Image (cartoon, rainbow, N blue to C red; front, side):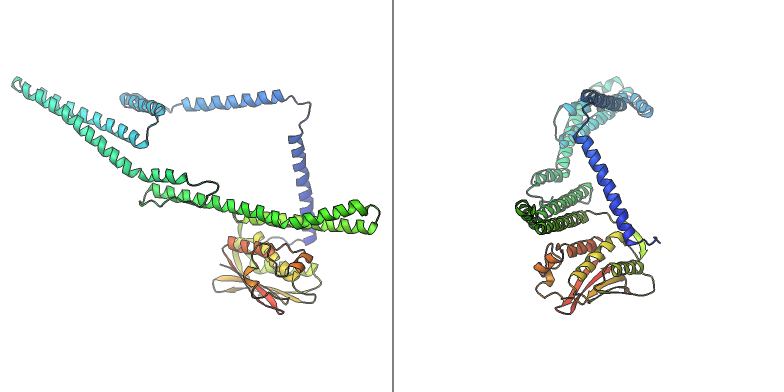
Length: 436
């Protein structure tokens, strides 16, 4: 079990760590952007070029090295290896389709085998025949030569047709990939009607395109959401900055008001950016799965809110029996904090906020219930949408960005769970998280 730490100590440690990290990043950025004038850049470039040449020479040397066993096989089957290397050089110079390469290689191999068998058969007959069979052997040789050519041609045709049929899905894949562009990431490859590597390749490419499309959409959503939501705090900061420029120098009251507003909106902007980055990261997030006691996590969360919130009555309704779950503990805590923060913002002073957990069948159920203002029926389907606020004016006053519940829903879905909400206007709201 992890040792419990005081929340203030954690906050102080995190703040110090962030300050040190930012200082190191700024120092590194300063060194990168503003190099020292005493450094001879030509020497640096010369050293880099020497390293590149050394790496290239090492790569060439590694390619030239041949395993002794492979070298022995090449010497033993010299005619075959000679033909193989000859074809490799030929194919490097000629831009031939894969079907043509297969046809040439298989036809030559079949032709050589057939010629060798025919020669061996004729030579055996010649040795065991008398002089009277010389005309017969001459005719047999001519017929054998014709048969070798005809059969080789038929074999080449069969290989060509078979290769065209087998590689038809690859040509279809190549043509379909041209339809995938930055403006059209929804195009997908047609499914291959064969249970082989081509079907697996098609599925892998379609899966890769799905990930690319989702990443691109997350990036678009991030840019759109950031530009939409940051307009208000930027406008407020600009307005107060102009007010301070005109009258703030001589009026202490205006100066204090302007500084407080700028600081408040700056904090709001920072919170929005951090939440947007978390949402963008959740789509491609690797869970740090651990086993832990859910009762302990929920109890610690409730106790931490009791220490910092004196305006509400916060209770914990968890049994004494341990509930062991396997998921990302930090993400789950972030999700419950987002839901609890939302309950605090929309619950009047003196209201009750209850956090609890229990086992129900084959899943763990976590509830966060409040006695707040509630959510209307028309707003209920939209509360998990980004930047949606039921009471927009009040949300601004409470410092709500409209992203908390979106983050909670994304976290639960990332963990493979389910989140639901029930609410009555004027009576309160209950959020339920199910972990399977």
